Image (tube, rainbow, N blue to C red; front, side, top):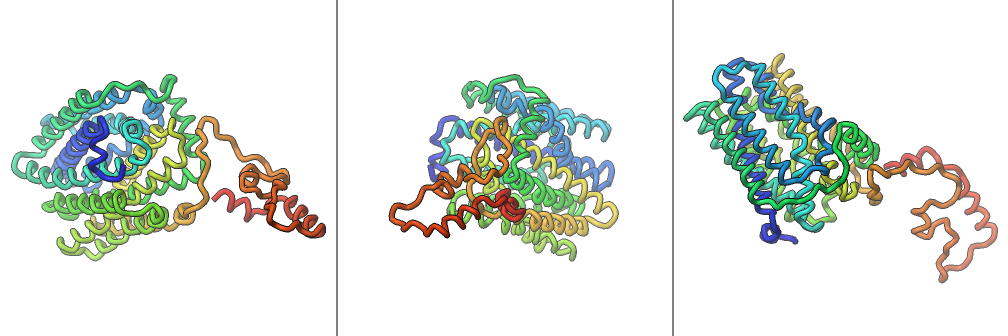
Amino acid sequence: MHTYRQLFIAPEFTALFLMSAAQVAAQTLSGLALGTLVHASTGSPLLSALAMFGPCLAQVVGAATLLSAADRLPPRATLTGLALLFGLGTAAQAVPGLPVAAVFAVLAGLGTAAALGGGVRYGLLNEILPAEGRLLGRAALNVSAGVVQVAGFALGGILVSALSARGALLTGAGLYLAAAATARCGLSRRPPRATGRPSPAETWRTNARLWASRPRRHVYLALWVPNGLIAGCESLYVSYAPRYAGLLFACGALGMLAGDTAVGRFVPARWRHRLVVPLCLLLAVPYLLFGLHPALPLAAAAVSLATVGYGAGLLLQERLLALTPPEASGHALGLHTSGMLTWQGVGAALAGAVAERTSAATGMAATAAASIAVTLALAPGLRPGPPQPRTHPATARAPRRHTGSASSREKRLGLGSGVTDRRAKPAPPSRRAKSSRVRSRPPTLTSMFRSLI
């Protein structure tokens, strides 16, 4: 499965694709409308940024309590119910005279429930597509999100200007209902991927086991923090250029579309590990230009270039799945989605707080500089290394203490196990004794650190 056309031949992928596109369109319209509504009511860059990205902060609550249900609930019923809940919540935010505190209370509830959606959706994608088509499938969903965001921000700007912010919110609610109908009618009934009863305690245990792996921990941090801080830059578009925020969002979606298309379709496998860090840096460096208060055309070009770096997410997701067993893929991807959205909320709060004391342009440049610093700090742990064993988080064990005998990996490679090449000449007795003494030495701190990396 190497082309987008082959993806849509797979049963149910089209329904999942359309449902995801409708939800992205609804989220785009409602987020822009709600940010505009809150900014008009309060005049606060911080509150308008939190109105657009604040629900992401509530994802941390859902990730800590609900995520074990991602593999333990029927996918079709879960996706349909979540879409209905989002539609009702978005319609409630359009009620005239609703206090700002009530608006944020609804956002917090929707954000908590949204933590479950990412894990269910990507876990279902792994069931629908074969292993060789999953990267391309995730790329297709990201590409559709980029296209829909371009159209959604453009349409959202028109709806906010021609109708009102509340009219755009009601349109978003209608799109959520359309997504629910698509999930109910287009997806088949499937049993849960895992047995057992979902609970907050089980969620905590599995999260801890996933986080305990050092390679997975590096991947999670790279997925969450750099692009979460850049989302903080994006949350200040309304404050930076109130009349042209929709244009900047559309340029960002266009750049993300180009990056995901290039990474998912054209980048060969041998280059994928090498492009992770450069793409993460590309995501942040162009935003430093906003510290100079560029004109709108230059700002739009910088946004378009920077968001190409979002393609790093696909490469990091591929590495995360390579480090995670299939039966825990839904939970692992759900934790990724919740953590990423939580950090987007954190980035919006940080950028908005800086903008409150300085300006929107300064807040964007400072947040971009923080993203660059985090990427450079994580770069050593993201370098390509030997493949890690895909042990289940529930059964993963701590590495055994060194006893002087050869490790299992050494035995598989024929090192230190007494297995020699039959064509090789035997070593002299003195060298054998020397090599035996070398193998019996305890590991140094340097060798232990290299083994962890």
